[in-house]
Image (tube, rainbow, N blue to C red; front, side, top):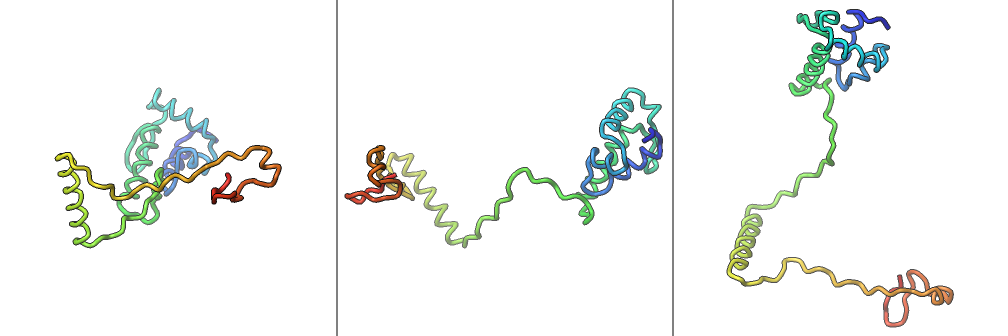
Length: 161
C-alpha cells in the first residue's frame, strides 16, 4: 500500500475504534506491520514529510497515532459502551463475604487481645491447629511384587504409598 495521507487517515481512524492495537489497525487497512513501524520511525526523523490533518490538528504520523490511541482510551474511561475492555493480568477474586458489625468487632477485639498478650509475653493457643502429619512408609520392590502396592492398607492401619 502506498504511503499517503489517505492511508494515514485510515490508520488513525482504525485506531480510534474499540480493541485496536497498532498491528491490528495496520492489518485492517491492509498495511504490513513492518511498513507501519518503518513509517513511524521515519515520521520521528522527518516529521514534515509525514504530517497531515486528523481531527482538526496538523501533526506528524507518530503523534497522530499516539493521539488516536489516547482518544480510544478516553472513550473507554468515559464509559463508552463500544470502548475496549481492559485486559486483566491478574485473576479477579470474588469480594470477601460481608460480615456483621458484631462479628467484625469480635475479630478486632480478639486481634487486640492477642497483640497485648504477645507484648506481655503470654502465649495464647493458636486459632487453628495444623493437622498431624500422615504416616508414610516406603514400599520395597519385593512387597510390590507380592501385591502390596499403592493404595493398599497393611496391618496396623497404615496406608502404603
